Length: 429
Image 1 (tube, rainbow, N blue to C red):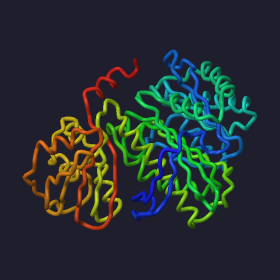
Image 2 (tube, rainbow, N blue to C red; image 1 turned 45 degrees about the vertical axis):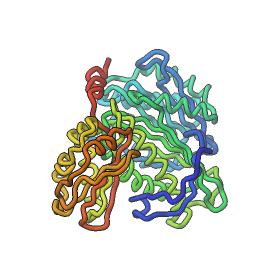
Image 3 (cartoon, rainbow, N blue to C red; image 1 turned 90 degrees about the vertical axis):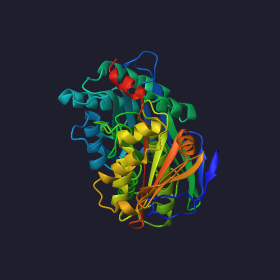
Image 4 (tube, helix red, strand yellow; image 1 turned 180 degrees about the vertical axis):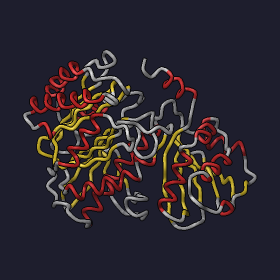
């Protein structure tokens, strides 16, 4: 166990209220909940000697929920998963590859999805419709299906419930990510310990309304599909849909949540106290994974947290926060440690929200302190050196009070550096 979290504030999923809760953060990821196994292996899809295929497997049927890219162009595995999540109650397995996105590959891409699912189903002795899929990498390149099929046997042979196996899966889904992204937590529900584990990948082509991201969350909670689906949709709106690295929305974005019920808690079928406890914990896991992706933006040196308070409505707050973290000029200013607050005002102004600029106040905060930059829409005399010190940390918060109402929202992004251009200039090589 690493630590306990008390009084964790969840802005949207829990109505912006402060709930007293005890979330235990534990070591591990998707194998932490009961009944889940994982594996990560090298299938040499794009690079030699690098893990690039992952498996997540539930020993029993698991209720499924998911959200997917809003891009009209959807990769074959996204279409495959949407069919299963929307038309079936449960699944057992997720197979993921990195290196190739299997997007813009036409009917051949769907054929390769079917071959992958059929191969996994045979090896695991489950049904084809119980196999979910994920792909990430270069768009427009067909899957090396023979390598994928060979990798399936390795995955099934190596799957295990160990923390190491979960780590391997987290590593195998990475592309330009510089660190693996995973978390596991536990909460008490009606006297039973319920565990949630998650992994994700995402570093570039990230923008609100899902991004170039894959996220997989497992839990041993007992819950209905209807309740889990509603919960996942609400949480996504204030986690993955509130991050931006570069303004591009991918073809492959996928969040899948599997819940197999092995914790033995009373079935969560309504919005009672058990529902709220689990939702709080699930929100925490997904917010953590979303922030990890924003922090690991391609070439990034600083995580930007944009807090909007005092907005007229929740939707206004979301639009304002996302507009600022999506601004290339704001990102560049943060990289330059320049307290150029006019760029923030500009981004607020083109967000599509109607507000009174003469009511807005703004400040910067980090581990180096806090500084107020403007009040009532006008700049203040402030210490430029202090502002630079605050902006020179690896995580900063921009706090804007609209003074228009009581709604708030938070978005996350990162600075924009020369390294981002270098990474994406030769991405295919």
